[in-house]
Length: 605
Image (cartoon, rainbow, N blue to C red):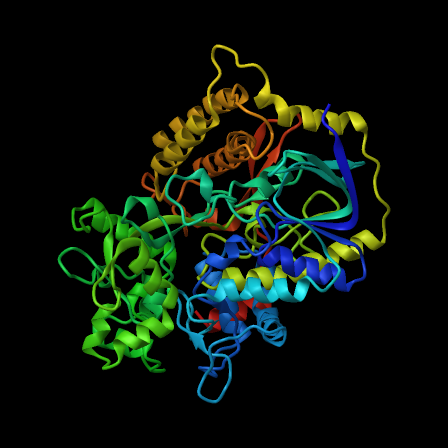
C-alpha cells in the first residue's frame, strides 16, 4: 500500500475561494488550529472570475435601499423557494461584511464623496453592487488571502480530497492526494467545512474553471449528507461564443449594468418583447428610460436587459433557435453604442470594464469600445448543493459544514447577480465560527486503518492492468459533458432527461473500467479519472431532481411543463442515499415564512 502522511487540525477547510478563506479566518480567530486544503494554488480560486460586484444594501448611491429591499429582491429572484432564514441573514449581514473587507484593505471604486460606489445589476431594485471595476472577485481573494496568511492557518496546496470519513455518525477526517507527486494525505479533524464551489464541468459549455467538478457535493453525499435544489443550475446569459477556444468564458453582467444592450442579428433589442408580469412595474418599456436608469436616474425603471439571468438566458436561446442569432450561434451585446450618448465613452468603458476590454481584445481581436460582442448562455452557477442549517451552516452530518456555492438554500430557484460574493462572506464567516465552536467541544474521532487503505486502493484502481473493455477517462468525461449540455441544459423535456438518466448509468459502468498510463507524478489522466465519480454523482442528482420537478420555475425550464405549479412552489427537492446506497429524491415542505418577513416582501413586491 501507498504511504499516507497524517495531519491533525481542529477545523479542516476544503476549498480556498472566498467562502473557504473567510471560514478559515473566522475559525482561526476562534483560537483553534485550522488547515486549509485547495485543489489549485492559493489565490487561483474560481472566485476571481466573479467580476460584477458584491451585493450589499449599503445605500451609498440610493438611500432608499435597505436590507429589507435586498431580502425581498432575493426571495423574488429565487421564486420563493429560498431558505428565507438564510436570505434574512444574508441581507442583514452583507453590509458589515463588505465594510470589514474594506477595513482589511480592499480597494473599492468610490463615489465623489469617498464612499464605496455601487452599480446596477440584474434583479436588484437599486444600485447595490460594491465593485472594483470588473475585477471584484480578484480583489476579494487578494484581500482575504493577504489578511488570512497572517492568522496562523496551515495551507495545503494542490491537493484534492477524494473521501470523507465519519466516526459514530460525525465527521472525523478526509483523505486527499498531492496532485504534483501523487502522495496520499490523511487529515484528521474535529470539524470540516466544505467550500469547493460548483459543478460547471459537468457541462460542455461553462464559465467555470477546471476545479469545478462537484467534489464537495459528492463528498458530502457519500458521507451521508443531504443535497437540495439540484435541479436549479444557472446558465449565465452572456458567455463568449467566439472563437471556439474561449467558448463559455464569462462576460460580466456589469456590461449591461453600465449601459450595454442585447441585440439580435437585425439590430433589434429583443428583450423588450418579453417582460414577465411580476417585473413589469419595475421594467422600462422604452430605450430612453432604460438608458436613464443606467445613468442613475432614480425615477427611471431598469432596462429589460437587466432582468433575472434565467429569463434573459431563455430569451437569448429563443432568438438563436428562431434564426435571429449572430453568425457564431449567439446574440450581440453592445456597449459601444453609448458613444452616441457620451463624448468620452471609450475611456469610460476602459475604466469601468477593464477586464472585459482586454479579454475581448486579446482573445477575440474585438474592441468592445467600437463593436459589439457575440455572447450566449454558459453554465455558470449551481443554486443547489449541500443542505445546511441556515444559522450554523452545518449539514445533516454532525461536524460537516458547507458554505458558498456548494451549499444550498440562499438562492432558491435562481441567484441574483452579486449575491454570490456576499454569500461567500456572510456564510463563510458563519461556517468558520460554528465549525470552531463545534471543534472546541469535541476530541478527534478514531479512524480505522482498513477504511483509509480502502480509500487509497480505490484511488489507485485506474493504474491496474487494462482489461479488453477498458478506456481512457477523457472519452467518458467528454461524453458526459456533451450529454448534460444537450439533454439536461437550459430547456428540458422528460423524454430527453430519461435518456440522460439511462446514459449516466452506462457512463458509471464505463468509469469503473477507466485505466490510465504512467505513474502518479502529475498525471492529468489520473486526475480526470478521480474526478469522474463526482461528476457522475452530481449529474445524476441534477437529472433526477429535474425530472421530479414537473413545472418551470427560475433556472429550471421544462418545455413539457412550461408553467409554474402553485403546489410545487411549496417544497424543495432533497437528494439522499437510501439504505441500499441508491440515490433517492423526495419532497420537503418549505417552512412558513415569519409574518414580519412576509410583510417586507409584500411591501417591496
